[in-house]
Length: 297
Image 1: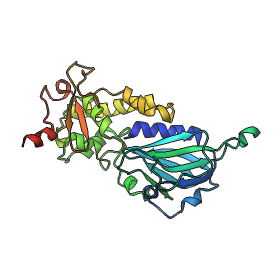
Image 2: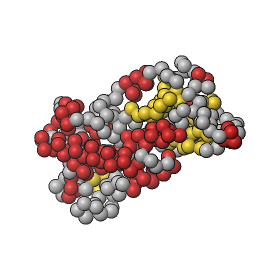
Image 3: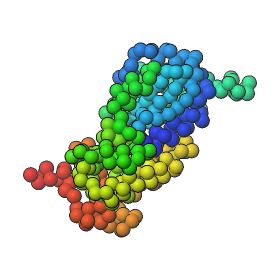
Image 4: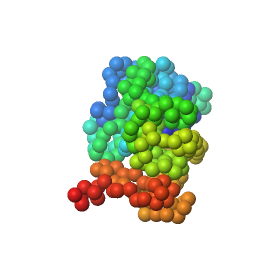
């Protein structure tokens, strides 16, 4: 799932590639991906892309005052195309394309470039759980998921983090990935943040000591900041591999922890898992694998 660093990098990429260009048209291949109808997508035609930003894990393309807001969900991605076919993708087709945006050449393009193929981007989604979402709104707060977001995980202060977690009698893993509490962190970076902070995923959020809270706040800034630094400037096509290359524990079960050498362990649920290092995070204790526990019962 694309998280804060990847979405920040995509916003930077679109500021470089799309801002200043006019929309030719938007094509919809997956009808269920478009969540709004007023204004209609046809309102994008001829409008200029004036900005690109991020709200948590939501990507926001400002198009002459309208906002094309995108949530890539678990299996979604943005794929930039230097050459888009003139024919629209077939609605309801079996391919991964959900949405396509055609952009006119930049205003300052050379005359020969004006006759070149139209570029733009596809939104694609892999897997059977189709949750990618596209909204066209006049105000980003018109998107329910954006309106419910908590403070941004990259910029939250220590005092605000204490306020957000205080009274939350939930496990840290769940608190970090709850977008209404903290915006932008998903399964992968929550594993990395907890590892850097030397905290158990099962520790209760409202039971942090002052030292643990300081470590968690520092880990948020360091892990996310470093990931953004690695990601920004990458092409959209290389962001996924760049994310994987920087991970210390997530998706590395069975491999040695790069900090202490202990074996990285995993806890599995029905449709997801998380990873941690017992030596760094749980005083050497191995956490119960919920999937295995159910089988034993």
